[in-house]
Image 1 (tube, helix red, strand yellow):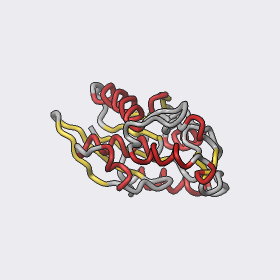
Image 2 (cartoon, rainbow, N blue to C red):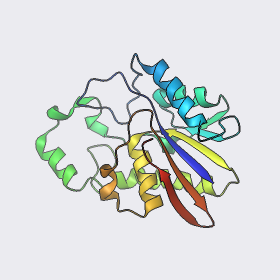
Image 3 (cartoon, rainbow, N blue to C red):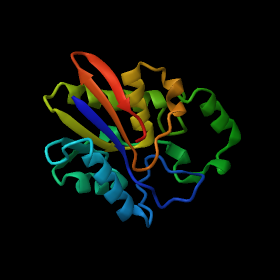
Length: 189
């Protein structure tokens, strides 16, 4: 099974804002970026026959619909829930709270949010269901943190190393699953 992990295109949020699970809009460049992403994806994948899933975030739904109007939505593909930090400037978050979280973001929850480990658990629960199905090609339109956790799984990497991978807006990563084995074909293409 070929699994294409596609990140949504750029958002209309100022730099330095923690937007995580907030349903934010796309930037003014969205149309061109979506077109470019779909074109690049179609070079690797038969988008007419691939099974497509999307995060419920509007920023993902628009891209998913452009890939293939016949797509499904799954809540487990949401970006990390930053709870009380959502839509705050990183600089405005209490330093003690953010430092505690940054020291162990894998296990420590953000206030009224979730930990990276919890995000990983829900994303991987979804992926387990996907690999039990008989699709040849799968496209998951989602978010940087979710993509990182799934690549960590494919590479058998500790989650604490997830942010060593760059996952740009509109990027495509490809992992494969065959006979119980994972491989990574490319990241952040």
